[in-house]
Length: 321
Ligand SMILES: C[S@@+](CC[C@H](N)C(=O)[O-])C[C@H]1O[C@@H](n2cnc3c(N)ncnc32)[C@H](O)[C@@H]1O
Image 1 (cartoon, rainbow, N blue to C red):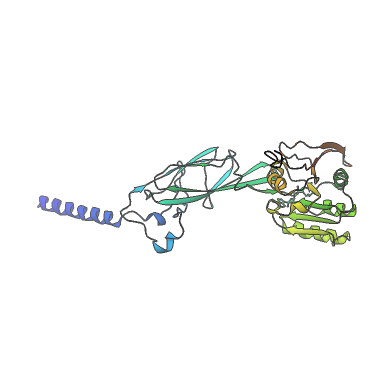
Image 2 (cartoon, protein in one colour):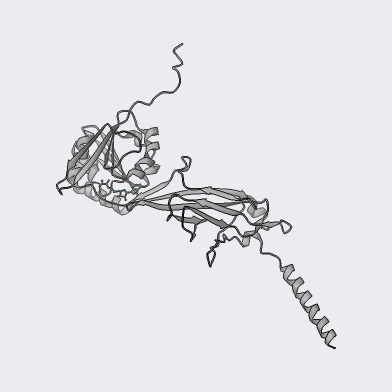
C-alpha cells in the first residue's frame, strides 16, 4: 500500500516537471532585461532586433535558438554620470559599469541605445549617446568616455547674464561697427545683441534654447526700439548651419560648449570674423587678445578675442610645377 502511494506521488512529480519544461523560457523579445549585478530589482531594458524590417515579418523568436546572455561593460566620462539604457535609468555608479542581458538568442542581432549625462560644472549639462549593435552571446564594450565627432555631444548651459557694463566692453573688444552681422549662441535676455545693434550692427541673430528667454529677448529688443534688426530663433546653437553669415560672434557659454562650437566655426566662419568670449576659452585656440576689465560691481572680468584666419590649404599648389 505504501509502495503504491509512493509510485503515485513519483508519477505526479514527473508530470509536473514535464509541464514546467513545456512552458519554456519567455521569448527573447518579451523578456529583455538588463540585470544589474548587486542591484536588488534589476531594471528592464528592451533588447530589439537590429533590423527593424525583420520585426513585422517575423515577430516570434526561433524556439530552437540556443539561449545565451551577453555581458555589457560601459565606460562613462565621470564617476557620478547618469547612464540610461534604452531610455531607462540604471543604478550603478563609477567610471566602469557592468551589466548582463537577459537570456537572448545566440547569434541573433540586437541593439541597445546608451545615453550618458553629466555635469562638468554647475552651469553645464552634457549628454552623449551611442547605439551598440551586437550578436546574442557576444560581450559588449561601450566606451562613452570620449566624444565621437560623428555624433557630437549635446550641451545645455544655464542662464547667467553678462553684466551690462561688461557687455559694452565685449562690443568694444569685438570692434562692432556699421554693417556688422552679429551672431550669438545662447543670447539669454538679448542684452549683447541689443547693445551690438545700438553700436551700429546692421543685424543681430541669437539662437536660444529656452523659448521663455527667447520671448524675453524679443520683448527687450522691441522695448529698445531695435526689433527690426534683432532676430531671436528658438533652437540649439550646436545645430546652426549659417554662422558663416556672421562678421562677429559673441559668447558666454562655458569652455565645454565653446569646444563643441569649434567644429561648426571651423567649417562655417569666414576669415576675418571676430569671436569675443566672456571668460571662456576655445580649447587650444590661442586668443589674439585677452583683456581683464574691472566691473562696476568691483569684480574682474576676462574677455578673449579671436580673429578667424585664412584656412590653411593642404598639399601642393597643383598649378605650380
Ligand atoms: C550663460 S547664459 C548667457 C546669456 C547671454 N549670452 C549673456 O551673456 O548675458 C547661457 C544662455 O544660453 C542658453 N542655452 C543653453 N544651452 C543652449 C543651447 N544648446 N543652444 C542655445 N542656447 C542655449 C541658455 O538658455 C542661456 O540663456
